[in-house]
Amino acid sequence: MHAKTTMKALLTKGFSFFVFLALPAIIIHIDVRLLGSQVGENSWVEYTQELSLLAIIIIFAYLYKLDRHYRSFAVLLGGFFTCLLIRELDGVFDQIVHGFWKYPAWAVASISCFYAFGLHRVRTLNQLSAFMAHPSFGLMLAAMGVLMVFSRLFGMGELWQAFLQDEYARGVKNLAEEGVELLGYSIALYSVAWYGRTLSVKVRKTPRVVAG
Image (cartoon, rainbow, N blue to C red; front, top):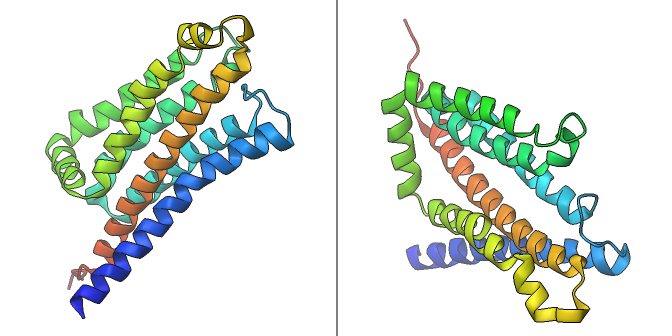
């Protein structure tokens, strides 16, 4: 019975993860083949990236309200992904002043780090350790590797200019870079949703102490 339960859980998690991996590719196909987009700032690929980040932030907001023990952890990682969302919305902030996105991003980062490490350092470190021990952390690590390392190297204009030479088109470079970023954000969203569900179940199963 235990083996059947384990196999069922494995198939369920595997199927849901494969769906999350398929969705970015479907969005790219819709954007390019149906809408004729060049995958710039005003594209469904870009919008889906921003929606993925917003969903992650909402999950951390939920964890903040779920239990006081998760608040500093939620503020820290929620702040991190808020900074990523602000960076993705740089085109909006550039209408104020070019590069203006850096100021709200620095403000969010400073407040989040102060709350997490300045006021609740021990609790934050304990919750980070718990997250690192959970299987979802491996996916988060992979997502950060895709976003911070692979997408930057893979999306370099020099690479695509050398490959395409006289046929170089910026839209091809945008498709490669933004498509990989969308994949990274999708994996990050899956990781956060998985861990958020784990914490939610844990809180529901924890007996509440009622003051007499």
